[in-house]
Amino acid sequence: MADAKNISPHALLLAFAVPLVVLLAHAFYYYPFFADDAFISLRYSERLIAGKGLNWNDGEYVEGYSNLLWVLATAALGLLGMDLLAAGRAVGMMCAVVTMLAFGHFFRKRCQRTEALFMANLGFALTAPVAIWSIGGLEAALVMALMAWAFVFAHDVLESPDTKKALWCGLLLGGVCLSRPEGAIFTVFFALGLLLCASYSRMIVFKPVVIMCAVAFLCFASQLGFRLAYYGDWVANTYYVKVAFTASRLNNGAMYCLLAVASMLPLIVMAPMRLDKKHKDAGYAAAKCSIGFMSLVCVLWVAMLVIAGGDIFPGYRHFLYIVPAIILMLLQSLDAMYGKGSVRSTHVFIGYVLACFVWLQLQFYENQRAREEGWLWETKELADFMRKEYGEKQPLTAVTLAGIIPYYSKLPSIDMYGLNDGYITKHRNEAHGFGKFGEGFVGHELFNSKYVLSRKPDIIIFHAGNKKPLYGMGDEPEFKANYQSHLIKLPSYTAEIWLRKDSAKAH
Image 1 (cartoon, rainbow, N blue to C red):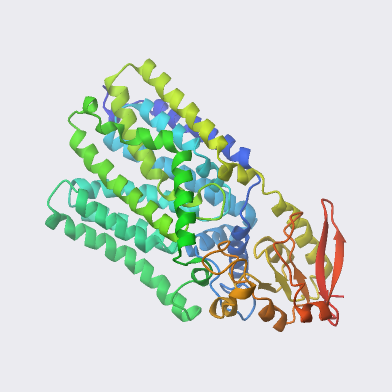
Image 2 (image 1 turned 90 degrees about the vertical axis):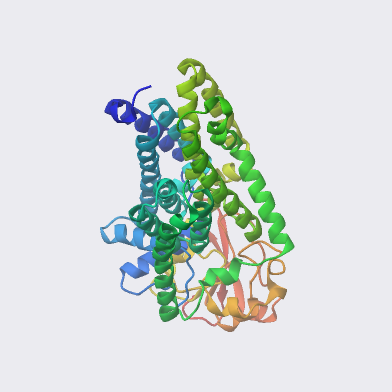
């Protein structure tokens, strides 16, 4: 078996180039998917670039995003003149490439067969959540890239008390803390994994683990300090809208994780095969520590997802954070398989497994749902109309879609579900929500019609493209008395908006 250091650069290039082409084609299959909430982040980025600050409306300081690093990354490309929608897609795809580079770095240090790297990268490229969220506009791809390199550097700490690599690992986990509220929890999972699975004394591994945690939590504390100073709150506003610990959330989370695992089952089953008795060799002990560490982190993360209630977006977004661990385990297993058996027969076996994997990816509705969200681009037609018709008057507009309509209309807005509204989250009116809080549709439970009407919005919009609105305000006497329906004929459908009768801005 050839030493990895002596492998042809052409072979390594092939192991990246072909899977990358497959990933691009796979992402195109889901194009033009882009999450509505991604436009919330883009609105914050846009306003930051314009010098208005990290806010959703002038004079209102509410942290309606939970992905600060992503907002800053897209804003950075926006400052260079790139359209922010394109910037969101570009950052996502770059993060997927960076993740593949992490696999390559791991391979050069710990594996020997380029066939293994090729097949592992191919498995990564064929993973639907990777393709979906490389273009989906939210921070999942960024967290995936940070986690991939954190897992890679954590292996150096697993094998020796390498404080330098612990520092790098801490910086990467700090990036996760700035990208997702769960970053601090991931850091704890990493610390537990290193303490329990390191190949040397726990007393010695304690020092690099402390360094890693200190750096990560410094990033966490820095953002917390900024949040307190800028928004005056301990947690992002999104916490109040989404987090609840109820039996309903637990049930939803369990089903979400069960289906996500089922959709990725072929790769998950193959990932720990390196530990099979027939693959025992000089690197078996190191592989045992590696797979034990990553498996523990994955299991802890899945358990947390169950408790948190999963996710409402398509493509099993939150599973993307542990996909790098699955691929790294798979890479080690494939390397052992190619080293022990016939290359041709191994190709046939892995090809069959990947074919089954692709079939599964296509069968799961949560993946296919990313192709069916055409209502978002139908809604853009309405948002564009609103900008052209009302852009100069700047009427206050209440919306149920807090992403695409405010972003493209450029109008001051009220988020009727509370994600970007501090009052709604602090004064929950459960009687008007889409289900009791913690038991309904996550993120849509805090609808407060009385508060919205008290702000006398000039325009109210319930439409989500050609979809039927979840509900309106037909039972509110003030709504009946003060608002009138107005139909707008758009290229794809006829939209209904509600205009305040006595508003000069709405007429």
